[in-house]
Length: 416
Image (cartoon, rainbow, N blue to C red; front, side, top):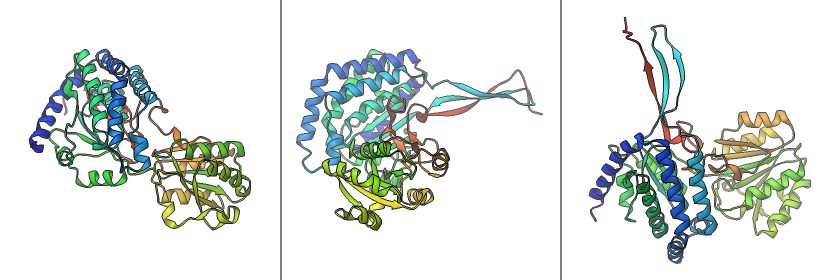
């Protein structure tokens, strides 16, 4: 295959489709989404067989990657539910607001419009194929999807359902295209086709995202890693603190919103850490603690500075005892990845300080970091969780896939 020629063709088709998608009405887009959901449920056995084929060839993947690669009947139902939720959401395209009159007599406002063509590059996550397609369809964009080679067969099977749904609704099948070659040269072409692609969204490991950000000639909405924290304050409810810390770490190990470092105020460490350590031990979680933590839990491993900067994506947890809220915030802002961080406290003033001063895309009070998710936020799904500060931050849903343009209403005014 001539990769460059193939990608140029894909790009031209996507650009042409994006113009049609930008004009599509809400009812038509929702019809496509519901038709895709129906096709996914109908073809569940086909999808599971394709996923098994991928899993059978994934012998060298790490456990976190295998966890992301595996789909079940529940996963397929969740994909369909996500598409239906996207269909139920308000259509952002064409929304107008911020109107004001100027002294000249003109009236200014803003209108929300699609970004155009979105390239999405991801690893070992077949569900992203459905989620990304759904979000791009509802936001009036065309998309080029490049899934990892480890999920090749499942992605192609999902793509057939997406194509069917688009055709049923009378939308161009080329509005969602999945790259049909696992050749990595296709990625190099995709991220440099500025004439066809308006934005790139990488979803995968830190090395993938860093490479894309370094080499792309197209704007990138990036998410590097998820070094998430829970801080247990001296005024925390112990029952809440233990439940949240358990869930934030053990609900799933291979996700970017999983807690990787637990911070505990020194006056409650002896109350909180022993029962938590028992819970973690029962679930096979390795604990690595600072010197103060080792004094409370002498049987665990010692943490090094590298642990504070590590996204484990595994049953490993770093623990640090801190003297106060300020030290906790300083640790998070120094070692965190600006993804998701939580405080457990019953003190209103401290919770407000945590909200103001922690520089992350999601900041939580008395809740598990696992809630940092497009579906949980009511976005229907997410195209990724951005740790950038420009354009989109946190879970990127429909609004994050649109932009705004100025609109002007006049009545014959001319500038003097």
